[in-house]
Amino acid sequence: MTKENIIRQAYEAAVERYAAVGVDVREAMDKLQKISLSMHCWQADDVSGFENQGGSLTGGIQVTGNYPGRARTIDEVRADVLKAASLIAGKHRLNLHEIYGDFQGRKVDRDEVEPAHFESWMQWAKENGMKLDFNSTSFSHPKSGDLTLANPDDAIRNFWIEHTKRCRWISEEMGKYQDDPCIMNLWIHDGSKEVPASRLKYRQILEQSLDEIFATEYKNMKDCIEAKLFGIGLESYTVGSYDFYLGYGAKKNKIVTLDTGHFHLTESIADKVSALLLFTPEIMLHVSRPIRWDSDHVVLLDEELKEIAKDYWDSGIRRIVALRGDEPKGYAKKPFYAADLVKLLRSVADFDISVAAYPEVHPEAKSAQADLINLKRKIDAGANHVITQFFFDIDSYLRFRDRCASIGIEAEIVPGILPVTNFKQLQKMASFTNVKIPAWLAKAYEGLDDDPTTRNLVAASVAMDMVKILSREGVNDFHFYTLNRSELTYAICHTLGIRPTTNP
Image 1 (cartoon, rainbow, N blue to C red):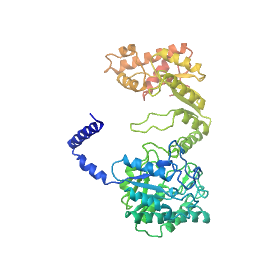
Image 2: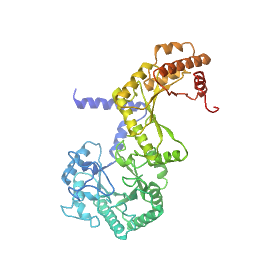
Image 3: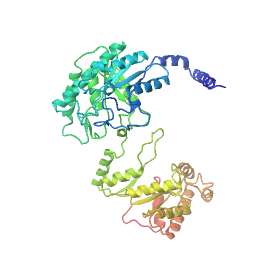
Image 4: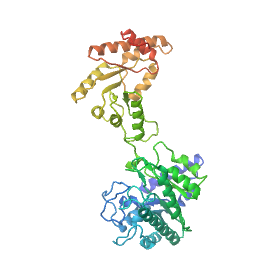
């Protein structure tokens, strides 16, 4: 059977399955053929463009750059675009940035660019049955700095106003040439690494600049305005925030651009669509890869966490257990681990920091050795103490303690003790924590499903035996997992001879 026949059979099977739930696949495919996506030229050369051949990107944007096989010329970009288009069903568009103009090797500054610099693009697009969209380009320029359209310096601000006006003019000519509106997107990186004395001041300047730019009405292009949570070097303040552009777009009847990579990790972009369409004429949606691909989209050393830690310290809190935490279902993994949290806390104040360890190996660890190295990383980041996951095999704890010592972990390995009041709950917990349940423990709880009193007695007996054995092995401190049953732990400690210094 040929590959084509296999694909066809799979397609026909899909048609039948979707039909069973009321979906006409062929009708859906026909509709999709009429929907045009706008591919971005950035994917061809990683945002280098042709304005500064051989130069580097600076001033408001940071990308990987110079990956093997990236396009180096207009011809190579166009060839890559056509190749991508051949692999995507339907007829699609191409989104160009101003720095991709056909400058013929000449230096053309951003306030001098004209439609003539994009005539070859318009002709090429027409020849290949493709339509164009456009973006102004305010980054990677000697006059970019931290502020462009929001800059109080008249000379710099007027430079970027002129640039953006010319980009709208180019978009108008593109739309006229292709007999279809060219979508022109405006995004600027204006902001600050520090909180400015006046947030309002720069937004007032930006509003005035936008009003001047949009003063000329065009018929063959559409204006879009795009926000961003923050950028690299601009972490504390973004002039063109989502709130700013939402207000401006609703007031001035402009299209607001939603970039899926430009919001906080917990925000739902899908939820914004219905609200936005009540007040703006259309929506531009930028779809990034299904990960936070740009390094300025991922918060590693979160300023909000630092503020929380500072408040803890100012409130007299000195001891913290630093855990990555369990990730909810459907939550995309982020490159942030307990070691990062320890480092963050240590940068704020001299906390007494405890971290977690797993005598029977963390369920997500690649190996026991990798898990041990990760623990060492947390200690090296500044952790003072180690608390283990609960266990019942004492030998596994002792072996783990020895392995910790062998790689230079000098902190005390505090054993985690779990008094088992509900054996079924224990089985569930053990299944996702990689904890082994010994046969003797399972036997001890047989027939006690409806006898909580006896279960408590068994739980106390097992916990006390573990404490006594571990004490003889030189363990001085213990961590009890109470699971909201502190009274049982209190009774265990009392029986072991531990008395509170104050009334409980």
